[in-house]
Length: 432
Image (cartoon, rainbow, N blue to C red; front, side):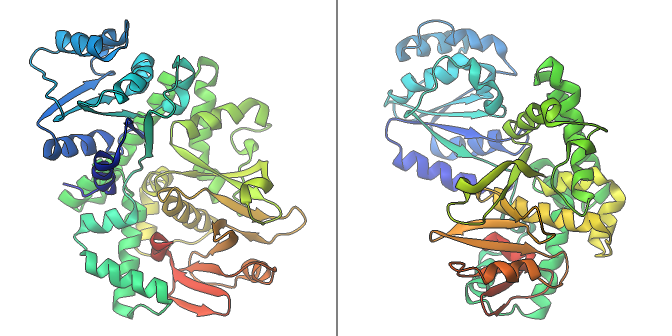
């Protein structure tokens, strides 16, 4: 069984909630349902699960009066044998985007103090317009992702004290012992190839077979394309699929800024922008916007028309390049411009799973570019990403800027410090 950080969050919510349901958001197949079931198994006497996609007939329980006594009557009528045991029951509303009235009902369910309610949704950003009343103030939202690198290490059996010792090295900016660094680089390449989708990780753990890993990833990618065909607006279905399939090509260019012309010759924002928003709202991709000037607060200086698109799971991106890309990464023999884009997406994977907004910096009149900017202590911290090693002239320029306290060079080497430049290996991004 995979250990997930969401489990600790669920326990924290149960112990601290006051008149609020929990709404877990995230892409399909990242483990939302499994996490809730495991939490219920150990924390509640009674567990009532309603999946609105698998059992659409249960939507009828929410068609009428949404007061709690009526909802209990309607649910128990349609689900013989379930019981709302006072203070020992978890009501689980899975795939709640398929029943907008259930989302509205969260307000009234949150006010019921005799049982707990958790809802999950995969396409909430897409279906929100169908909800008659968003229960603001009555739902706590939690964004869940596929496994991050630390969770992947747990799955491999790496003990917490090993990770803690690496965290100490990060905080002290001291070098990692060479043998340990070599092993961690190996684990990182495995993470890049496998990614964090739970089904894929389980295949990897049980078989150590990269062919089976690739097959499982291709199945998930096929499911995502089918979701686009099923749920996207009719006029946007083929365009959204083409946007999704263009991401590996976008990241393989020297300049990874998203270009609509990469989707089709003559492609424009007017034609495709809504489709990209659909992919973001389905939690399949993340935007990374250019910020000029690179000053705090970053959101105030965003150039909305200049952005990059990253996949929200590094393993799925690598799988889109084909099986031989896995071989090149695992043997550390990858070369060419695609390498830089893959390592950019790797760092984006780390940041997104820590719920850190993505920004980058590039002036129109310069080739200089810093791949990511984050905020710390009301200051901007630049992150320059190198697939291996190399100079950091763009980062060096920003570090000379008044008010920039420090920055990170994220590299394939080891830890260290050089003036205001903090040098860390890629895997230590998990500690940012």
